[in-house]
Length: 221
Ligand SMILES: [Zn+2]
Image (cartoon, rainbow, N blue to C red; front, side, top):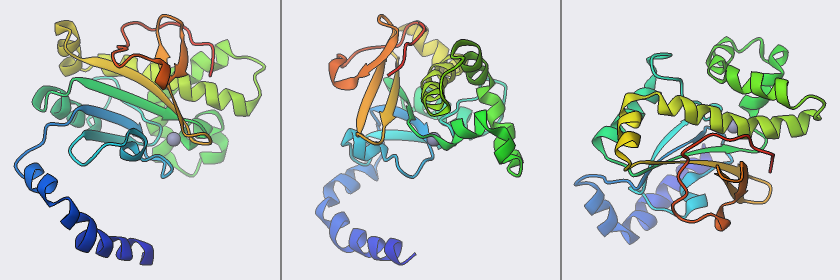
């Protein structure tokens, strides 16, 4: 806690004061650019990797960047999505998976996680990911398999996202874009899914508007 307490001090006495105008403006309301859905993993920092400020991203995090399909759960995920999409009117949703994801490890090595019943239950929302990977990537070594699983899981969770009425309505109206991203933490690179080429490409090669309209097989990073 020592590190956190000294950070609090630094924030309150130096950082906050240097950005007083921003926080004063934000105290009157928020208008975030995007809903950013990612894993709880401590090694991912959405504001850092996108170089954004407080107020820019409405963030939803959980183990495995999972979005239960509409009606599958009454958890906070659906409420957060509704707020961002129907109330705050975000124009973009980014669903960002990452390399070395512990949740993907748990999905494929469930015997090692038997003492975590809540996690096992939660991962049933990624059962399609498990099935897709097992039936399409036979013979792939476990490390690569988990990497592929992280990518497939982003696409599966985007399918779940589309089942939420608030999202479906805005997609039908054509004023909401969904982006599939993968963060490779060992290089800091972000890859975005290109539905035309059916694979994740370095995000810097994607145009700013590269909406995810269709799901096509991916071929790996
Ligand atoms: Zn993760």
